[in-house]
Length: 255
Image (cartoon, rainbow, N blue to C red; front, side, top):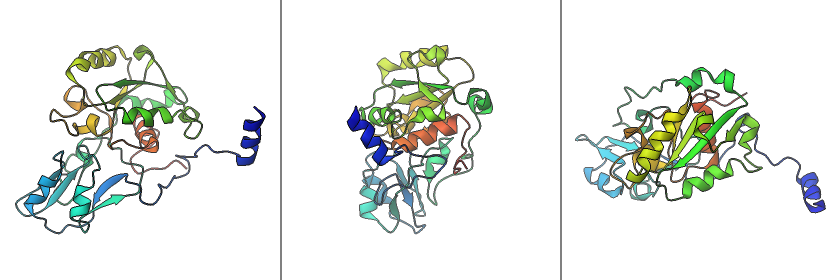
């Protein structure tokens, strides 16, 4: 006990101040892949991607679907002048279309809408309960979600609490592409959650299927916020939760 007291006095506060203070990612962190050039690319480039996240039209314009990207880096290694890793945590989006990037991406309907939970967030602040359900993930996202409640991230300071009961939950965190055995439990969980509620898809599998061909969670239930990544970092998931609760908007940091 004395050891921990001395350590606390010596190191002072270790909890992140995010989102009131931006938290830069370390150099070289692979938070997402950006399309950094609009130059035409060969159609064969799309074949490099194991998940089909890259599309190239007849004019050579490229688009990247972050909802399917597993950050393997094959495209970055093949064409570093076109693709690059971005050292940022925030990757969440309020619509599936907003996960598309590049000169060939259709952004016509990328503007996210506000869910019912975000509209009534003022009533729930400091008391937003989160239910997590694993629908067939590889376990990587679960480690990152668990970290949110450790002393460094301490998401309870922002009013988010885990609950085992969907009847008490305001936000449903879903990981995995939703395997057939998990479809019915997922639907039942969502059905019994009270209104207003929000669904956050965490990880590439949940957002777009990843290596699986059948797609993500939104083929079954409406998704309010997508948090891509394989897996996304705890700050990325925190950012997604803040978006879902209407506490932050895309690109915003609390003052």
